[in-house]
Length: 193
Image (cartoon, rainbow, N blue to C red; front, side, top):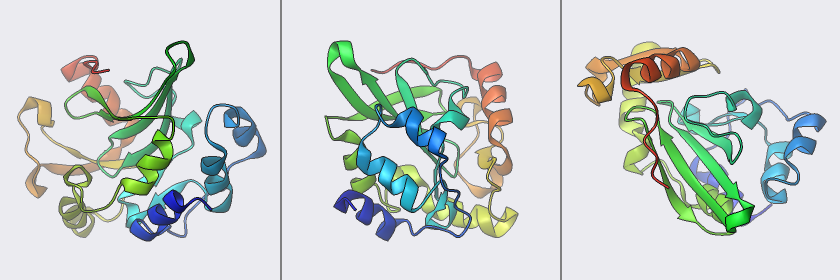
């Protein structure tokens, strides 16, 4: 296995609730994503990593998520607070990039622009990064229990509406319901390409 994915497994050990991709899923993405990522999916699967701090997702499940532009974006991961890590590929511009859809502030930001951006994401992300909210995640798990596969932790009121990143503002609920509520309250994503 590629060293980047080995580093990911060390930083975010897989949980026991992983689901292997179907042959149809592999076939759908085999010409769109690196072979190393598809091998990682086959070996480990979709589900919680790092105790639920991150979730490796089946991209098809998030194609309809607010902010995903399915013509150029492939969702790869979500964090425990619902932000979505995406891969963007625009062949006509020779562009490959990895970014995050910050659902709380309704923006998207690409932070790795490189041919090997997916490998760099998996090899470089770690629980100590502030964007992971690891301490707040632990507090939320103690208070609410781990999120189910369709759930996230979120802020109420929403961060864009004056909520704060502390445990008194955290709740747990359905990810897609929360995405839709944020869209209704805060509007469409601000593009940052």
